[in-house]
Image (cartoon, rainbow, N blue to C red; front, side, top):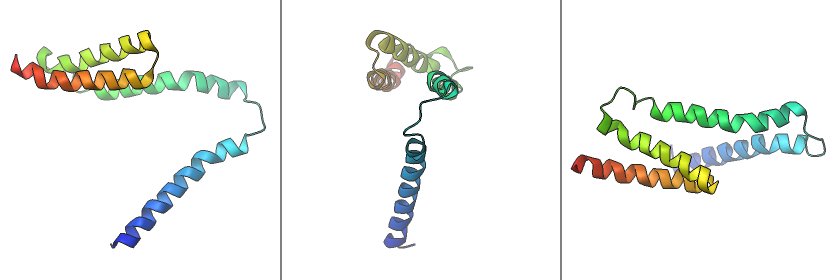
Length: 109
């Protein structure tokens, strides 16, 4: 596979992604949102966060406390930062930095 072929694959994938994401907005541009879509818009972000939480912490259960501690402290940091600042980027970024620092520091104790 040469560089041109790889570039074409990336361009087709990018174009397909853009079109499929823009299509619902173009289709529903002049219509009011139905109550069902409003409900999904309100409930899905929380549901997705719970799924990601379970996925990320699934390996931490059953580990010794010192090995699982960075994950659970980072989880607490996400919760606290989001409750205090209401900024998703800060919550995720701050908890990620805390998690990485704890991964490096806890083995030294």
